[in-house]
Length: 229
Image 1 (cartoon, one colour):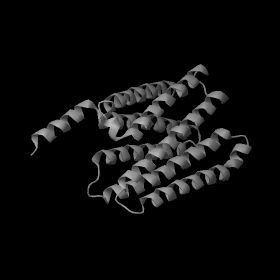
Image 2: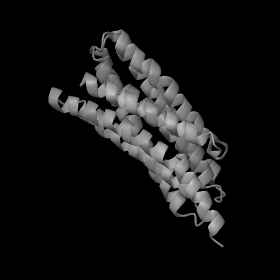
Image 3: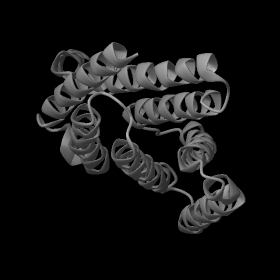
């Protein structure tokens, strides 16, 4: 399991670096929030790995605390990105500001409710399981928000195909995180499978970011634009 964690961390980091490098060619100006999200993800993945390695590749109380703080920070940053993309996708709608505000309030209420509902688990001496429940619920609510974003994108005739791909990447990440954290609740064998799902999901999602903004893709799009009437 530890070897796969090292592999997933290395591959995820490489793909994010590739995506950031590709976005520096100009895409970061069009999608600054996504660029900030990837920078934030990259800056947090290193401390998460360091905390794990310093603890001797075992999950101690310190490394677990660092993992959950950084993991939830990344998830919340993804929620902010979803809200910004929803605002952009629905800019033709007169009620989009109210919709985004309601989504923000609903998300805050859902997360606070999840924290309070599962708090007895933490009191009983299982803080790691408590955080697993919260992270699972964050991923689940994020997936619902992503569906709202998709409804706005599909209802817009002038939709941006890149935003569609960004939404697909976020939806993939939210779904995999929700599945992985749900599996962590079960016995050891299924819990280990949940860890594998989350690690594999991070590789797949970061690869989507890389493929989306890789330089060859942009050159091909530019070439098509020049040759088409």
